Amino acid sequence: MNDQLASHRARFEADPDATASFEWLEESYFLAEEWERLAECYRHRQSAPSLESQPGARAQLNFRLGQLLADRLEDDTG
Image (cartoon, rainbow, N blue to C red):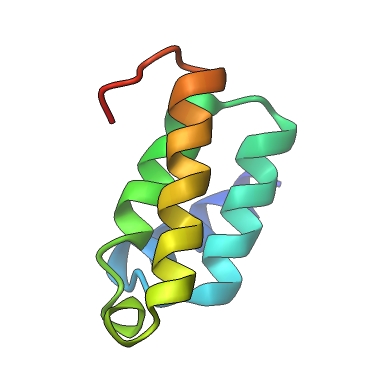
């Protein structure tokens, strides 16, 4: 799994529009309860150029980040 993690992380860091890697990382971090990494993943995904033309997808991502910060990281400042 470490090789897969490293591969997906590298792909996603290079391209925040790499949807398959984002989804893989999101699920992995959630299942492992790695909340800080999941928040970083969401923040990086916010910079994806494709989201500029998808306000619904951007809103959903912002909502999930807000939920994570409030529920798991106890940070209501965003």
